[in-house]
Image (tube, rainbow, N blue to C red; front, side, top):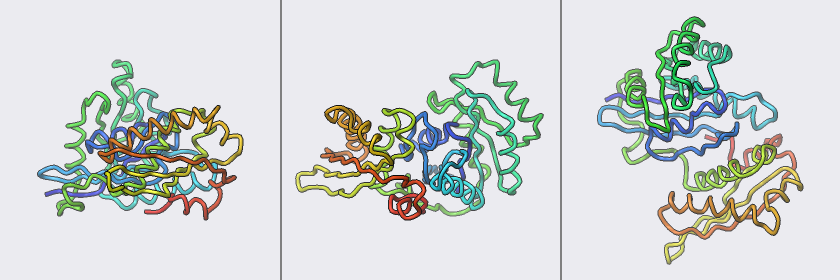
Length: 294
């Protein structure tokens, strides 16, 4: 039996969370086209007969602009030093950059086994693939490179086998029926934040936190979920709510459907929008809203 933890690392929007979700077979991390979608380390557990892979999905490597993003980058660095292997994820569609080769060299220097997944190959020109692999080789990258498409399911079996081969012998780290280390409250908050990321303009989602303050199952089986959507400016609050509350109702409706799928039951969802100016630079509020904690 092989078992171990694999840090999933890469630049923002490389497709890390989508890849982890598909490999695990369950949605353990939210996804969107915007940077900073993943704010903390999230474990996704893949258990097979001969091995167990514990993926540690990390925040995308991103230039720090406030205390929250500084904490996010610390999470990525700390995780990379406390795992059995590293899966570096590259966005093949966007093209491999010199920065990627430098980052791979940086993490390879930690002495932890490392492989590379070149993602989104279904939407990149096929003729670009050999050139991207050649670029990495000429840049000194010695790791095995696996071209994959998470959305199309291409190359995933080979990638999974390559990851499993790097793991040490050992017992399972989690029971077979566990797919994530995160609580139901955490996932409900993340599902709401995902819909906000997908619906609103660029300047709004990055300053939003979602906090679940009520979560209980009634005698009739319906889940009552009450949550606060926290933003940084009064103007952002007005945009989030929208004219006659339409924007918030639409986002909440989409989130509720995903919550019902996740909980496998009906959900009665109540949402409130609150303003906490510059909360992303407040250590107290960052902790209060559940970020930076294992």
